[in-house]
Image 1 (cartoon, rainbow, N blue to C red):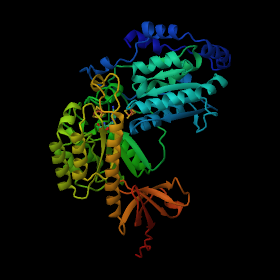
Image 2 (image 1 turned 90 degrees about the vertical axis):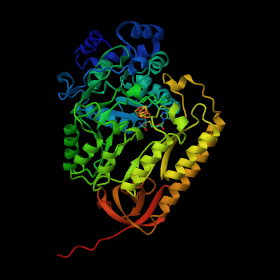
Image 3 (image 1 turned 120 degrees about the horizontal axis):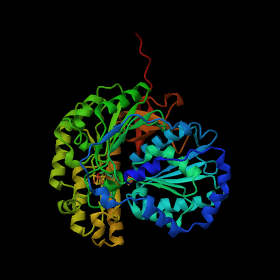
Length: 525
Ligand code: SAH
Ligand code: SF4
Ligand code: F3S
């Protein structure tokens, strides 16, 4: 979007909320009679420049602007009073956290949240583009929402998140789902109030997706899910461009938040009584590289370590940038937990090379040794893709042997899914689906075995559990996670929810532990 187009988008008509009712009929008319071609022509040839993956790849050297001045637009104050919103989230923690920000923005406008689509006045789908099946789920949901919109034309339905950064997705929505009111991209979240206003009062679908990125918007309101664990962005975007991955295009270039802004947020969370923070970024080990100061993730963790919050995690690490300084700081322990999620993707140096991961099997194993020397009890988990183009049986066997050698205690495992616009999508997807499925099964079997073995070692041990609430399966049972991120179920009073308690493990399963709470006798002074 160029300057003039942005200005146009900024010039939002100020309308009287009483106009909303009279919009209903024209809204319905739009849904039923949209001329899709005309709509697409209008958007793509006039005011709207579609998201463009090629453009998204052009990283500019321009400075990152940081804005601290977010405020609810005056004419939007109270606009959501008596109304409800629902946000469905797909994808990673980054998206979950973006949902918290959008929930914060909507709450600031007066909206309340609901889980019931029938009650909602605004429904947003915060989407993920990482694999084809993630996208299919969203299109399925869009189909389900259509009857609701026909029943209630005043309902505003929006699509945001990573899929909206893809031109093909925007095109498909314009063509096949014209009842959608609003599409906005990952760089446009802070503009939600204004875009919502346009969608409510305008007669056409509102589309605003910027390919250009570069800004960091601080001080956005957040409606966090829960009062025990919190997410904190430390950086946005990714510059790694692994050949299979869509994220660098959908999330833009790497931009680090200033250390002082992050530290202030963590301090604030600690003061509010949060027990755990997870520092978020697509490649947290690149933190600080774009700042003008000589400061990296290790330095940041060393400062956060001193904040009075019991648990600090971070995700996701990239092996290439995982440096000695970080290992040295993590080894200091305290609130820095010795669980490291270190995606490897493949155990074959050749596959890693074509994936453009920028490390070899040997380098990865060296890093693991380094981590284990500094933190002998560290738990390692990973992400793995099977069936990458040209992956041979032997190369897959190398992945299995690496999994064994490292002793991963769990892993997210995926079948390769070509993503339009990425380099790998131009290569033949030539591993047959049957073979991919068989590889995935073999890999999962091995991971399950290693997980069960790691769990079995906890039998008889006492672990510290941050109690998160009632177990999903049984409300009489409480559940929470250990420092090394193992799920523990045990019986105890509801009053300890949000506390860190000692639990003695009585029974280990493949993915969880059962235990009994250890009652400490009151200390006599
Ligand atoms: N930034 C993180 C991961 C982000 S995506 C990292 O670099 O590790 C989460 C996981 O999805 C990746 O680790 C990878 O295993 C998987 N993934 C990404 N693109 C994929 C694709 N096209 N097909 C299958 N899996 C994919
Ligand atoms: Fe994707 Fe690679 Fe960036 Fe991770 S590091 S988000 S896998 S491009
Ligand atoms: Fe998906 Fe976007 Fe996250 S593609 S994995 S939601 S960064």
